[in-house]
Image (cartoon, rainbow, N blue to C red; front, side, top):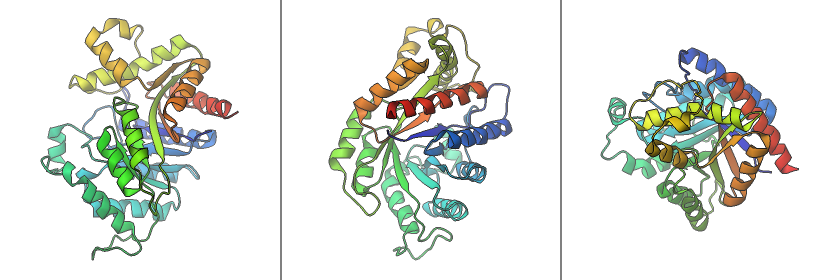
Length: 330
């Protein structure tokens, strides 16, 4: 059976704070390691009240230091926000501290609104266009025989797996051209998923990094003892998406009974589209959804995300998912 991994946005729940979010993140990673998850990724976002993983490399170090075997990485670093050399040094440091356990996923979106992006010193007109060159420059800093005169110390000569992240066809083409593994953000932007997968696989060029295509897909899971309970838990994420898309992001709200019945048709259509790659329900319901998604996409790995308000319920959702993976393998 394919590997399952964890994507954590380090959620800050309503009435809580970043410090508690970080404690929950480490606890989830430690449980995920015991449950057999392949990797634990954190995503770079800025200026969003409900997401605490802005200083992504710092948080990766915290998680890697509190675990022993699970791979830990970025899903991803928004490279246009940074100098490639800085990222090479940061992840060279992480790989030196936790050898053989660090992943580096790269995206070209700002991970923020435009005002916040400007505060990050981004040149909005050109930075995204520079993304392929920045990826190549970053890869060179990790090379044992780099072309640049400037060296990344630590970083040079370290074998850090680089992934290209995307939610459109651009990332799939770049990953294929560079011979890198590809992670598609189907957990929140599934519209072009099948087209991107097909384009990546059909145009992939083998490289020293990878000899054949490798696709990881984001997938939402809200698993509980009953379908009704799972639908209730999922309303926190549903509210968060509506808040974000309406320009009013907030801390992750508590679940609400009958939320989908209280919103207007436009918001309902938005959520049905955003969360079309999701399993919401009891064990049997989630198992069937996982099986159908894997059959449809032929994914090489799933990156599971469960944005659930109560930490104990979030742990249970991931535990159920890990158990179901073993059942699917059998």
